[in-house]
Image (cartoon, one colour):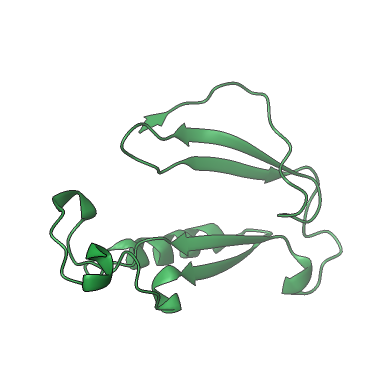
Amino acid sequence: MLITRNSIETTPGPSDWFTGTVFVDTVAAPSEPSRLAAASVHFDENPRAGADQDEDRPRIAVVIGSTRPTRIGAGIAEWVMHVAEEESPLSYELIDLAVIDLPFLDEPLKAALREYEHEHTRA
């Protein structure tokens, strides 16, 4: 992964994803074979101004993307949530893809090894 700060310029974020004026800036871009990317999100005005309830606050989802039984992402995501919520004007929600309980990415070993236990993965 290449971590860069490409410029001080910012890019407007999609209005259907966020409430208020939001900007999304690329912080890390994936390099093969990785698909992991990181972005910084910031708001033009104080998102908490006049908001008394959580549903009025801009929301950020922290997604646990790994569903493997041997994953470590849940602990990391919980730590990220704890750190992010400290003195933050935003509302955070933890989303765990393993809770969906779909038969995808549920192998105990990483896919690069090509050693699959489940028939639905081999199919």
